[in-house]
Length: 106
Figure (cartoon, rainbow, N blue to C red):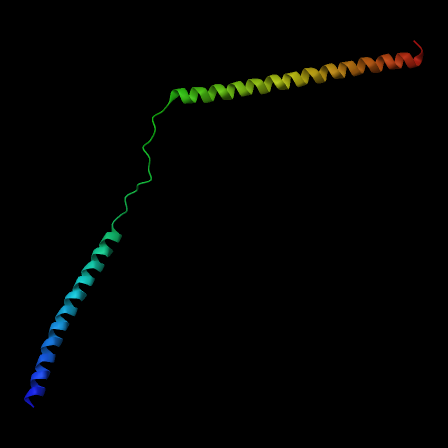
């Protein structure tokens, strides 16, 4: 009976040590979870902002010059088409008048 009692005492002591180890492991896991939770609650730093570029007058002068030049070319093209259309109309009117005179026998 004494062997059974000694065996039971050893197992009880070993179980107590195991439960102490399990408690320590559980406390460590809880501490890690709390630390991760606090880190995830912190505001993330915004890292995708680039420093703002300085104002470049040269860039805007070039853009303005290109726009003005393109506008002038477009306006000259429109004037050329208008002059061509006017000349074609005058030519057709003159030819029609000559054709009528020719048909009348003059």
